[in-house]
Length: 183
Image 1 (spheres, rainbow, N blue to C red):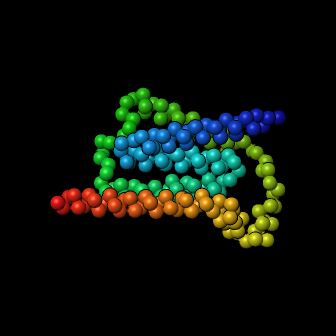
Image 2: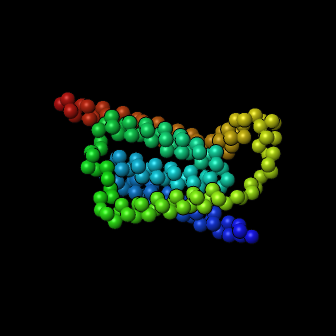
Image 3: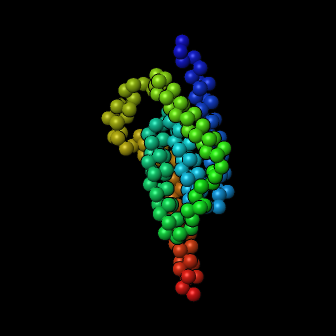
């Protein structure tokens, strides 16, 4: 049977992307350049999206990429540009040839994993008509919004408070820099 090692395959990749997320998060908080830190945060978001896909939640993985790695990071980069915190020389953390080769090797490895995943025809674990029945009974939004606003409401609200704190912090830093430049 060609798919005998799929549980091992998924377990390996789950831990791989978990470790990648942790390493990228650590690099995010240790960078001096805010632009480089934002790029490491994008890497963390993509790793989390891959973990969601491996957990049979492709919609949440896609939303992770679209909302967090896309829209929220555009806002963060806009704030960084607005505050003029990054310099062009600080953007590249990997200045040596070895770092560039390592980044290329990781990119090729991830591309190979995508190719392998797209060729593996894995049967879904849920019945094929499950979503159609759920949509018919509860509508389109309820299967996703129900758990978000019931079981995971605290995490959702904490995230919104953290984003609000980031916005307030950006405004305070912007005001402080404006006052310092004027005086």
